[in-house]
Amino acid sequence: MTDRTRNDEALDQWLTVINRRNRRRRLVESTIKGDAAGFANVPLRFVLKIAEVGPMRAGKMAATVVSQRLRAR
Amino acid sequence: MSEATTSSSGASTTLPDATHPAYRALLLQRLRAVAPVLRTDGTPLTNDPAVSPLLQDLSERVAAHPGDGRLWLLFVAVAGAYPTTGELEFLRRRLAVTDPADAMRVVLEETQAAATKSGDWDRPLRLVQGGIVVDVNFCAKYVHNTGIQRVVRELMPHLIARAGDANATLDLVAWTRQSGITRSLSAVERQRVTDWRALAAGTSALPDEQPDELVVPWNSQLLLPEVPEPELCDRLAALAEHSGNTISLVGYDTIPISSADLVTPRESERFAHYLTVVKHSARVLAISESVAEEFRGFTATLPSQGLVGPAVHTVSLAADVPSAANEDAAAEPSALPLIICVGSHEPRKNQDAVLFAVETLLAEGLKFRAVFIGGGSRSVTLSFDRHLMKLRNTRGWDIESARGLKDRELWSLYRQARFSVLTSLHEGYGLPVVESLALGTPVLTSNYGSLAEIGVHGGCVLVNPRDDGEIIAAMRTMLTDDSELATLLAQIETLPPRTWRDYAVDLWDAAELEVAQ
Image (cartoon, chains in turn cyan, blue):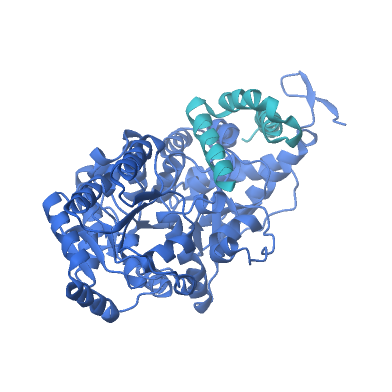
């Protein structure tokens, strides 16, 4: 017999974890992408990126951004 | 404002439907999108806005019949991410030993990691049933435009037109920021893929914005005209193996594995993961017969894993340049005969052998100009360019490198050149060879593999790229023997044209890209 209350609670907990994770991710992204952040915040944004995706991928993304900026000149 | 209530355990909590309403609504939308195909008995969905009864219902049904991609689809709808094979198998096994009354909670537990790490919680989901989905992730997101990107961007407008002829629609998709699932393209991304030439020329109008949604194929055909990023491969492999969709992919080469000595270890590792997608795919559409043989070689290893592997077809790329290339190319003739060597600068392209031949012939007293065209890693190009500078300064030779040329500058140099050189050690196709021929310029190229496939039809001199003496002798002849050059030019005139439209039509047929009517 399905226990609707237990299911509802399980779903609520599940969504709470999703919410927490997405809130953190959005915070990181808004800091990284924010136009107002300015050049001085580049090291901070890079550190946050490392925290988000790991050093290898963050380095790769940084290299891509730099090369695209250079190409755009 | 959420409302307080008491749970079965007696603890004070909140009414579930009042918490995280946006995520709850998205989850409900996704479940409703997949429910019609998971509820095969045809019972209509109720308008109940609560999530858990529907999720429990779908979980029980899928637990009873998880095959034919049903478990994969439920996972996608709940997590907002495609599963890996490991995640899917774990869920399947747990459901098999779970009481049906607990099925929903097991589904939530086993999708939690994917949902938090890779799930997308910003967009609704649209199921593409019996359609054609094309993954153009890289070309949509980036403006980089060499090799594979050029093929994709030339192909896509013609493939869309071919689909239109068949009253079909192509759903172009990229991957979400978390690399978890496919989504529709923005207007700018669509333009990068379908209207590149106009975009590059600055004459394009931005297309209409598309709905921002997750796009999930179901009983559909997924075409991969790019080589996917490594972080996508596990989920793509699971899609190929477990979802019931059919994957066809364009096979460009197996160089990172079969010529691992000529690439970085990272490229080889990345390609090895790509092969996990290949082995579960339905078709490889190889860009040359030489590449088809390479993929057949890989496929021949699969029976030892109990797999059949994909069918491998050859669909040769186009031998075409934009019509504007011929117009742009009305350049002033060079005072000295010009030799150009086109290709990204890397050991595989064998530029060092070409430079050695150039130095040898200039030292003999022949008068000509040489230009090495193509970008590359600074670690490689720096020493090469320094050497060229030294030769210019000390010997007065007219040798230079051109990095980052625009297309029209490249076309102009092709037209000015007496001949071009691509004596690569291993190529999937050799776009510089066909582009040179399309612009009426003879080519010195390699005498095996895909380059020989192109070269045997005329307009080319074929040499062993590992034999410096052969390269030097052939270059000497092409520089000094006008009758030999005239013969090559006459052969070029007789070459049959092959357009990107031809390529798109052949690709459509070989991939059997038909939609369910």
